[in-house]
Amino acid sequence: MRSIDERITTFSRDGLRFDVTDAGPIGGDVVILLHGFPTDRTSWDRVASRLHAVGLRTLAPDQRGYSPAARPEDRDAYRLDELVADVLALVEASGRERVHLVGHDWGGALAWLVAGNHPTRIASLTVLSTPHPAAMSRAWRTTIEQKRKSWYMAAFQVPWLPEQAVSAGFHSLMARCGLPAEDRRRYAAKLANPDALAGPVNWYRAAPHSGVQAHRVRVPATYVWGSRDPFLGRTAAELTREHVTGDYEFVELDAGHWLPETRDAESAAAILRRVARAG
Image (cartoon, rainbow, N blue to C red; front, top):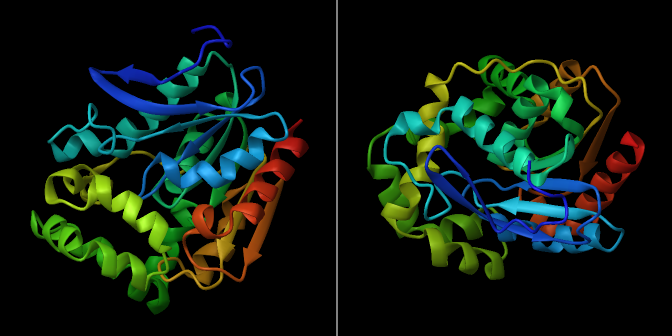
């Protein structure tokens, strides 16, 4: 492990180099912030500043497929076991035995898996928008609602075309699902071209071929869900409780999907409550 007093701008794993924003009091408890699709580490800027104000240090990486030096071409390089290992490498780089873990969208799904499979490294878990993977799977199998909301996941299995379509319609697609203009312009500058989207879309393609089991989560956990989320429905949100055995809080907001960007105050408050209760 490196010194806890050393700032982290990058970390490496298996020949890949990931960019990181390390901010806040350097001696504070560490909170790792995992972004989703199709965003980047700057999605956490508003939330992170609120955490810094109360003494927490945040590490926000650009994940696999998003960091320019961590964009393997092979689909299988984006299996869930690889993504989990990336997060554990950042925990190791932090120099801490345990960290507080936060995720949104795909970053939330990944956070559930890391906490469920590696609880000794996670002091607390806060997930925005995304239900526990097992709850999501059950809702998809049993409800029309989640099938309707998740149609794009099947569409993303097609080679090549999803990158072209999302790139061409990035601004209009993101506007229709509620992402603010300032944020979608920033993400588009990095991602609104087919080559840059290949890695992020491969998260969807590789997921069905991943063997990571979604264990129940024993660490203290908070799940924040927007009742107007166009992608993630109520059934999966409510089923998530069945997959947490530790202390649990469910926060329902009258909001859409992009909680770090649009509900930063409520998101930060939920994280801070969870960190405080974890001791």
